[in-house]
Image (tube, rainbow, N blue to C red; front, top):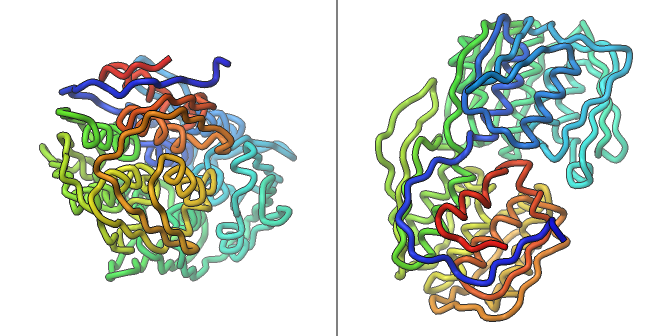
Length: 441
C-alpha cells in the first residue's frame, strides 16, 4: 500500500534548526476574516493544508475571490455583508472542526440555505455546542442528531445575545464572536479560558470589542454591526506542529533542536509548561509581539531524567491538541503521571483518550483509566523490539504523528497506516522528519 509508512529504526542523534508550517488556527481565522474585510488582504506563510485549502475553496463558493501569489495569498473582501449565495449552496469543511464551526458564525446573515458537509471523522462530531447559541441570534440551523450535514438559513433580523461558554471551546466562542460582528447591539460572552486568537485578531483589526479577564473566565462584549479594513498578516509557526519535534528531541539520544518563529500565545503553551514540569528544560528565545501574538524561537535538548507529573487541570485547554505527544513523554518518565478531566480529547477527530490508552498499553506501559482521567506509569528504560501496526484510528493526523515519534524514539518495527491524514494539518511532516535523519519507508 502507498498510504502507509514503515519505520524500523530509531533516529540518530541530531542538532538542527527548523521552521514549521504556519499556525493552522490562525491560518483559518485569517482566511475567514479576510473574506469579510473591506478591500484586499495579503496573508503570508499561510498553511497549505487540506483544512486551509478547503477554507479557501469555501469562501470562493460564497463569492469571494482569492489568488495565490509568489509568497502570499491575496483575498478580496466586500465587508460583513459580502458573501453572495445561490438559492442553495454546499460547502465542504473536510476534516476541519475549526472551519466548520467558525463559518457558521459568518453565515448568520445569509438568507439562502447553506449546507455544510465534512468527512467521516468530522461527521461524527457534535455541533449542538455551536448551533444552540447561534439559533438564539435568530437563525435557523437544521441537522440530524446534531451531526453533519448542517444546514443554516440566516436572517436580516439578527438580535444580540448573552452567551455562557462553559466548555473552554475556542471554536464555540469564536463562532459566536463572528456572528456578533454582524448583529446590531451588544453581544455579551462569558467564556471559560481557551485559545484567544480570535480576540487578538479582533483587537488588531480595531473591532469594537472589550475584554475583562478573570481567573477562570473572560467577559467579552462586542458592539455590532462592525465592518473592518483589509489587512496584511504573516502567520507564525504552529506550536502544535512544533510539539512533535520538541518531543522527538527530548526522547532521542544526544539531540538538540531549535524551532524558529513559533506562536507561543499563552493559550497554546500548555505543552511547554507541562514538559518543563517534567524536567524537559524547553527554552524560549527572541520573544516578540506580532500583531498581538507572542512569537519566539524554541530550543530543547535530549533529557534522561524526565519525571512524572500530576498535571494541573488548568493547563488542559492550553495543551488540548498536544496531550497525545505529552503521553509519550510520560511513558518514558520516572514515576507516575496523572492527567484529569480530559473528556474533550474524545470529542476531537477521533476518541483520542481511548486510542491513547490502548496505544500505551500496546507498547507495554501500565495505564489506569477512570472515565476522563488517566494515570500513566512511566518506564525510563522503555525500549521496544516488537512489530507494531497502527490503523483504524479514523485517519486522525495527530495519532499518525504520535506513532511516528514513538517509532523513532522507542524502537521496534512499525507499520503506520493512513499517512495522508497529515495533509489536513501538516503536509510536510514526514519530509521534515527525514531532514533530521529519520529513516522512513
